[in-house]
Amino acid sequence: MPRDFSPQDRDDPVRVLPDPAREAERERREAHQPDDKPPSRLPERPEEPTPEERTQEERDRRLHFTDGRAVLYDRDSGYRLSESQIRTAVELGKFRVIAAQDLTEYAYNGNREDAHRDIESLVRQGLARKGTLEGPESSGRELLTLTRRGHRLLRSNRLVPPNQAVFHGFVKPREANHDADLYRLYHKEAGRIEAQGGRNLRVILDYELKRRINRDIARFGTEARPEIAARHGLEVVRDKIPVPDLRIEYETRDGEVARVNLELVTEHYRGRHIAEKVRAGFSLYTPRGEADRLRRVLDQRELTADILSL
Image (tube, rainbow, N blue to C red; front, side, top):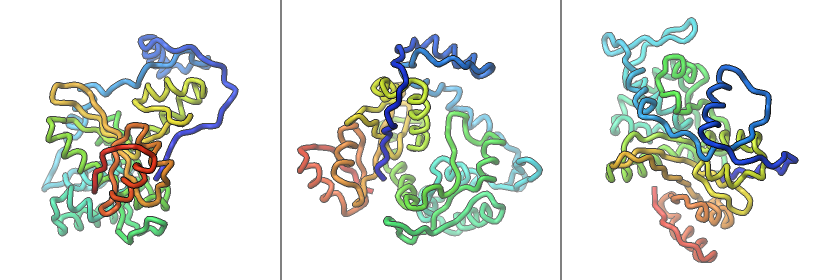
């Protein structure tokens, strides 16, 4: 769905651009002692995840398995989970909503029996939830998401690295079917990245990007919108900061940090929204059979872009 960040103008004073080193030091101090003074400088860009952060998932997941299961605790409850069930819970947290069919295809290599067993176990233990949601993009598919309890279990047992956001629940049922397709989109693009030597892929959904932008707008005002967009690897288009459906950050073959911004364009997108996504430099994916319509829209606006199909 089209999701751009365009906050209302406010009367915040214009602030001076920040020095990145001083800003990093200030943020470290704020972690222990909040500062009520308004920030005076805006950092150039968000800190990239360190190699230590990227490998923390593997360190933190050294769980003790007995008979193929590990006991994970949250508050006063314990849960016996297999390694595949833990991986599934992590995938649900990273993507918020996944279609059961796509989860079976990509996480279980098409093994329906194993996927069904794990999904039913997670649902029975109150860690995941199933739903078939209606709406303009409804397809009748069975969708999966974490529950609040499942979300807490991931965090309390450090099953994902601290720089990886995790989500739970069907927050916007009208958009759930569109959002579920992002899991398939990720795997399509991840295959391209890995074929070129990319590794250590990290998922960033639009929820997380908009939260970061919202925080910076509140701190620095709308006058700093171009710097805020640049800080987050985005562009200002028509006084707005278009936000992609999905971003993948990764290491290139040469060890450099790279990113790709992805948008899943459906028949419900208007021409103006599509044009904004193209001008923002996003890579466009479309469901099968809709690429021709999208090309016609771009031709009418004298725009060109690579269009990939799910």
